Image (cartoon, rainbow, N blue to C red; front, side, top):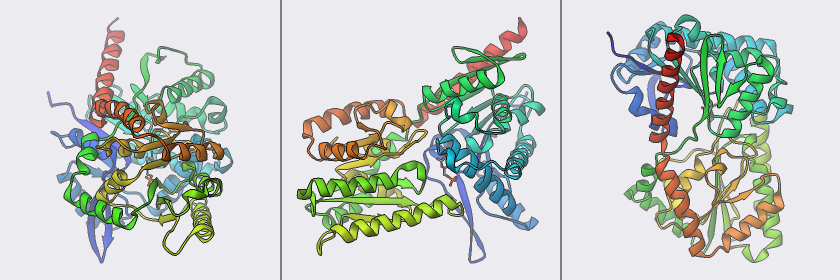
Length: 474
Ligand code: G6P
């Protein structure tokens, strides 16, 4: 009997291909998911299926890409410009993303976008079917592919299918606004195991399944026709050792020394996100303004390093937000700057691993205040990088990670006064208290790292499949 394969499917592959001066360049992703799953998809005949990030029309180029990826256990799903516009920028990021992050006023409900979403999920399914055998294990990731589990199930009824949602699942009152709510739930229920970051997301999903489809659950186990579907929470961790070790790397140390010199005599607050309205960047900037007004003794002594990573640049709301942030930063710097001091150091680009690692270790405070976030890994990376355990994390209650990191200063990101108070508390917190809080958080993050997360999901998937077999034998 051939060995069972594990196939990972996500919208993006863990590598992005770009065309530079007529040549193709392959840029591996340094993200948490890619790291965690590299031990899985690179083994045996396993593979990762996803979009390589470029449009390719010529068959010869597609063949070349396919060949190259195959050597590294990957297979591409080629999307057309129209697919990217309607499926990725469209239904995924103009409908599902805002709705699932509670930005109902941004969500667009357009039939043409929905049809593209179905069409592209089918494209992914066709590629999965090219490689998957009837008993293989298929692990589908995130909101771009909510229909894929049931599409695969239809063709491979015995396959083991896991699904993990990396973004929040909204409460029933929000979810039911979606015209295609039934199809989305049915799509997800093609899985054997459905995972969320938090217990609340899982509860919201189960409530929608019960109220919209009428399927109740017992301890997260849903019975649908003759199938069992387990729903559970698996808070995603980080590659703890990579960040802890990273701070000792000579390249990090060199950058660290440079930053320390440039920002000498100053306390540094860091803010690092993709440019996204869900991240609460504007609220953070407002808080900086009130902070300097309320505590003028910190003018010249504290600065914010604001890293905003470009994202979804063709979607209107992201373009508008970029302009607002530019304006706010300019206004704040105009208001408070001195010849020898700038309050906000603003970077609209991504940083290298060593650059981030140096910032994490040199910053006194991390200000991570998303209005809504499935998990948020930046706050975990900051804590893991604090070898001397000194530093303070201010974290939004609305981030999934707040459930685990209860020793951070937790704030409501809409309460600007509370953010200002938290900044003052962070900057004046005694060192022993910082160490005590960080030690607790480090212990949790070390234990529940990204590798443990993968193991726990895979173990649970196997358990559900066994329950399913027992049910069939009865
Ligand atoms: C979030 C989503 C991911 C997505 C990432 C980057 O973390 O959960 O699925 O890949 O954002 O967004 P992008 O639109 O660039 O893929």
